[in-house]
Length: 494
Ligand code: NAD
Image (cartoon, rainbow, N blue to C red; front, side):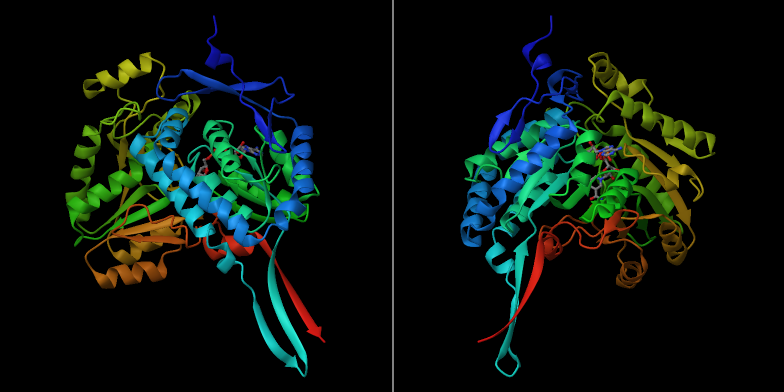
């Protein structure tokens, strides 16, 4: 017999009320560590998405006309609530996403920082004015909200990415319609409950669960002024083109293939830690993961053995266990996709120095978890990877690290710049000159120097380049304030 959690279907938030979806299509939400069904998510219909937008649009004048200082008070209360619920939210993220509790706490913290940034909206939204642009004529520029904005989010940061969007959009005076990932929708509902508790008026925030039908409705609804999207590159390209064709402002943050360059003078112990935490943190399901390391000169000889030895020793398990260093991947099908990428790497001629599909030796623990229904892989490391291999070009989004070699820093940078993606890039070095050359020449928006995961910092834009980003104004920082507001220029004579 099905348990209560296996049959519980989570609700949508519309017009300030929690309602059942009218759709009879639902998907299970498994805990990736155990396979246990936590609840079910409805695949809401296009009509439900349009209804949520209509409710938000009806609610907008009240929220728009609420003074920005009062809107900021809601943000301050939200900050306090998030702070009080960090552990609970982290547990929710771990349960539905699989990452470790420490990683989950980290993402909630990064989300809280965006709320802190948005608390400053009375300053951030200020415009400019100039007296006597002509005799007796003054000009003033005001920032005003857009109306209803939609946010479409991915599975890998169920707390942080919704919090990249909603706090800034709402503080700026917009109504926010959220379509969470159908794979990790539970934390979004908890966040929405906290927003209501913080005093957000009915309709200012809504949550419509579902998949493509809901996204397509939001992209075409005439009352949606702007769309914020975070997800994979093909869907980002589609969202960007489709929403733009419907006359909307769009920011679409996409996939990645991030490179870390290690120079021969780098502190190898530190470099190994940086590479491992970047490649295998969140089981590699992170758009800032460095999944290719390019060793310069003889750095490979010292770095590669360290990487293999330490990755082999990593404790893989349920993220809820505090001893776990790497959790499972999101779904059984995703584990198959990652394993297929490993097989393709072997077929293309790379050398598999550590095989995360291996079920022997240290893996008694993983085998046991597999039997219990979790979606586990251990870290994999390829060496002898060349630029034309899919390992060097395609996002795998799993715990697979590729090691390439280059004779000089210049050639390492050229290798990295061949990527069609440009989210992040990292250098491990003790040379200021090498770091400077790297940060000036690398084609990536977020650059780390002896830092494995460069960002996100709420006060700055999340600045992907190339096919890692579609749009003009990025998420967070002043870019987001400009994205969620329109500028009105008033010229007057009295
Ligand atoms: P995804 O593209 O599968 O899904 C993202 C959202 O789009 C979800 O809400 C989903 O329901 C919706 N969606 C999926 N397919 C769709 C379709 N065909 N039409 C319309 N909507 C669709 O992404 P994911 O697997 O949830 O997330 C992982 C991806 O997100 C990775 O590629 C990762 O690099 C990327 N990501 C990027 C950033 C960034 O800041 N650049 C941050 C986090 C994740």
